[in-house]
Length: 409
Image (cartoon, rainbow, N blue to C red):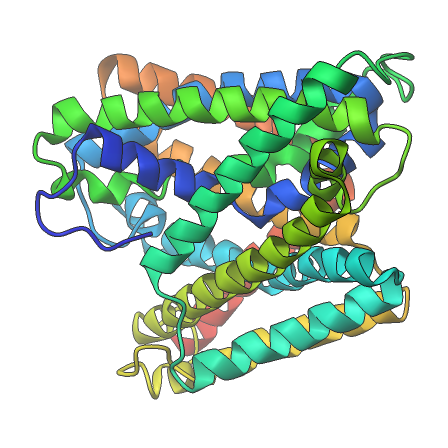
């Protein structure tokens, strides 16, 4: 996202930043995984998450307006629950990057494999190469600008809208029967997978101070962004069901584009997928590196990781990010893991972050917004139950964060 100047945001620009924060590489694969999990009934999972997103967005808007703090969601958790909970939140974010980074790389790899007519081993190998390039670029300070990343996200929005516009009129009624081939419980599993596409409402709360009239403009920006995302996601969910339900696709957006634009559109989508995934990885790895260095300075991680925190992208944390990423991608090449597993583990970590943030919101907000935060917390806990054994990932990450914090205190 672009770095706004003081009081530079109006409603439309703020909404654009929110949409850019929400719509990322996940849309290139995750909708098809949801269809795999629940079939056409996955459309109900999209609807349920949109229902959850509304009070979630309102809660973070209230936090941004009434408790404007720097540092993002970790700072909100610290304000309401203390330093230990903030350290756990940071640990969950780091764990999400450890697991999600390779998943994002593999998403781009799948599109390259589709372009070249190759299989999963090639996709994993390409993902490993992309991961290495992004790590090296960050080590040398070559960062994708936030403005360029927002441009990529904007192009992706246009591509999604175009894909929906061409796929639904011609194929919209296909593949809707049987509606729930895996049972109704599978809708919860699909929602758990789709969580990745709804992470981002918390990112804009810290921008409250950049709006000219925060109490007026921030909620309206969120409402406008919510409307745009609702239209896009409902259309994307329906189109993915109609086009890819019987295809077991790993490149669903390319499949949608191919309906109207043929091979040329499919190839162009692959190029966009690579650019978007690498750009997103660059931004998130840089952010994770700075977060790790910040946690080290606060005493939540070993101080050695903050040794070069003065750099725009600290190098020492990059090593910490590289090791699990290379191991996980190597496991994918060897066939010992899957993108589905990495995405579900990442979603479980994000759910953990939201649980802590909402617990804090219940403590520091008042009145109707506090009640809404409590309602959203209850829904999020229900959603967490569908994470199954993937909940072990945030539990282990939380325990590790607390253990490291005690050992370095």
